[in-house]
Image (cartoon, rainbow, N blue to C red; front, side, top):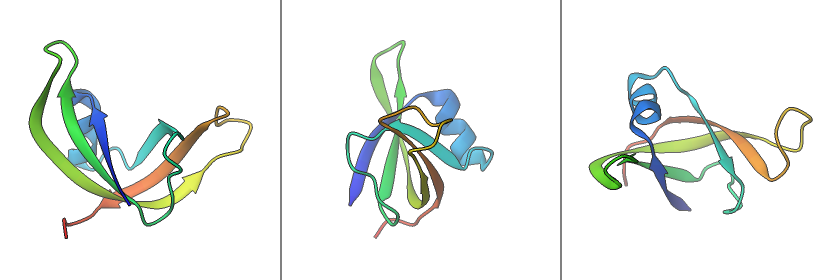
Length: 83
């Protein structure tokens, strides 16, 4: 499954640089290991997509833990080439 997700510039840059290897999201899409996150850079000030995007594969899902808010997931991610 491919999930298109709005990503603010500061977080997008951290993913691109390799500094950020996780994504925390509301689990309203039933995320699964092996899913692809199409992270699309979005400028909230201009309320526009910049056109930049990167595909990341979900390697690991952490949920239902005391330190993960109910209804949210923390996903371990890595760069994935588009099909």
